[in-house]
Length: 391
Ligand SMILES: NC(=O)c1ccc[n+]([C@@H]2O[C@H](COP(=O)([O-])OP(=O)(O)OC[C@H]3O[C@@H](n4cnc5c(N)ncnc54)[C@H](O)[C@@H]3O)[C@@H](O)[C@H]2O)c1
Image (cartoon, rainbow, N blue to C red; front, side, top):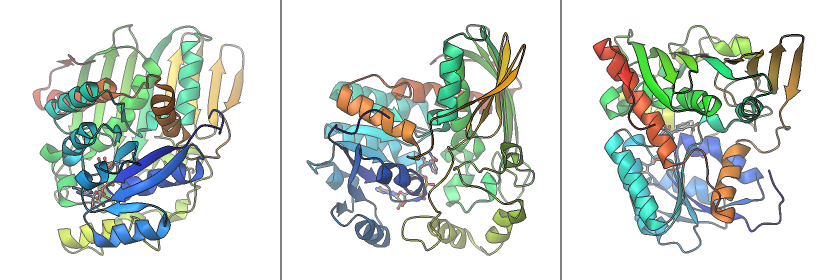
């Protein structure tokens, strides 16, 4: 994080749901960012936003938020399938944009978003994905210096309860962007691409869909090949049994200490929902205004175990830094301390908006990641490797 003397970047939040709830602590604690306005269709969420940020304005529609002259950046945190419409609206109004991952469901929408923001001359940042996490940044910088020779292989593994967290109905329909490939693959692919920093050329993958009550992909295995010869394996299960946080010193994805005693929590909570409407209501309890708001995280976020193998060392990411297993010794390199959650996203926003600097996770980056999500599904369906075109 650079100096504090710059004028805070003024953000208008579009979509006051779960995603905003997770990015909010980072925006609130960073003096370089000012939450200026919010919009959402639900009166309850607007009221909760107004109560939390009394000096801001709230709007019912994205169009109205985009007319607010105080808003410099629109953070689009609405469901995947609305991202394109909302990004186009912001671009037309000349606002910079941060759009949640995945940037869209279709590649065509992603291309329209890039075109609109390019034409408007505004920044488009896709995230926050876990590629913004501090340990990922530290590992990427270490690898790019070539200190341990060339990167050769990446292994990324994650076992979570993703499929059993309360969902809106469309989050369980693959063609609408549901399932783990779009929502979670986007994180893991971003992490792997950030470390590889090379063009991905092909994907071979298989997917798992084995709960008849939640008929979408809950798991996948994917092999990626990069132009410079790096190979990567990505595996994910959201079936709420084993939890890889056990291998991350019981620090959860969002940077909170986690107790093994909470085993089975997601399934028990979900059992309270009898209908899809009940389940959508349960999801609302994880958003702004809920009495169940999580405390501020103490650690950096992570996306499960990741090991990057260079010629002369394996680098293992942890929520507090990087374990280096070199030829002669094993050592630990800490990241910067955790003061502002998701600080990497804020750095990117300030870089783009205040300094006009390029950001790694821009529209073209988001499109490339989305193409790999589609390639995972296509490869699993056809049994063939898929050659990539938009990297
Ligand atoms: N980066 C992360 O850690 C993270 C975490 C969760 C979700 N997400 C992403 O965020 C997006 C939203 O997912 P979510 O889980 O927050 O869903 P959610 O349902 O909790 O929140 C979506 C919000 O958008 C609002 N909304 C819907 N239509 C709108 C409109 N036309 N204008 C303004 N607001 C509108 C809804 O009322 C709701 O409050 C998805 O793309 C998801 O992948 C990212």
